[in-house]
Image (tube, rainbow, N blue to C red; front, side):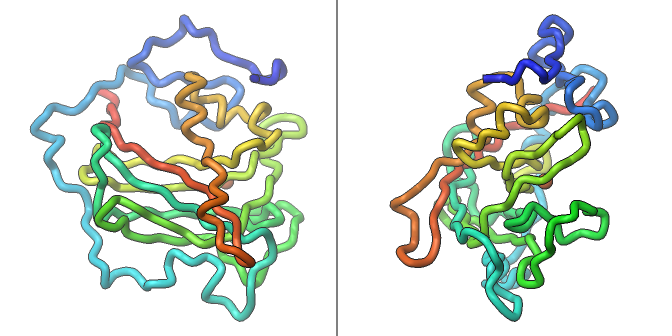
Length: 233
Ligand SMILES: [Fe+2]
């Protein structure tokens, strides 16, 4: 359900091949493409994207609870899934990067002035390569909600930022993963900037009790499918 206080654009103002501007999400006006979007010609699909070798990563780069003097505060979770292409085939050896706020909703970043506590044992960034089945996994803590000043009493739902490269440059994707049952989803203009309700739901991870580690952490599962990102022409 969409909260009625969120301003929705007129559906007639854009077609399926035009990225919608979203009036309720103020800063997106400077980011959204203004011209028609088109898929790149077939011959450009084959251009290789960046390749990262195993030796470029530390084995603990995907454990955001490690690397500090102590354990971070918050609810420990494992977030994992598969990276797939549009035909459901696994994308192997592909770099997946994440960043997030700590359990109190504060980023370890100098421009974050939210007066929630920093956690000396949590920096909030990680990365890994997908395995032969396209699987990736991170150990972390559940991020807290935080205010973001977009409108009166605006709070972001808990989310984790993702950056994936895929196999070719046109598969580059920067997105956000959300948590099921979060009451703030109904009020979030960024979440609702994805207009198709079915597409929007794909941004929400599945709770995965079978993936939980007894006495250690809960788990969420979230698959990422990379199609061809259209570009401005
Ligand atoms: Fe964020």
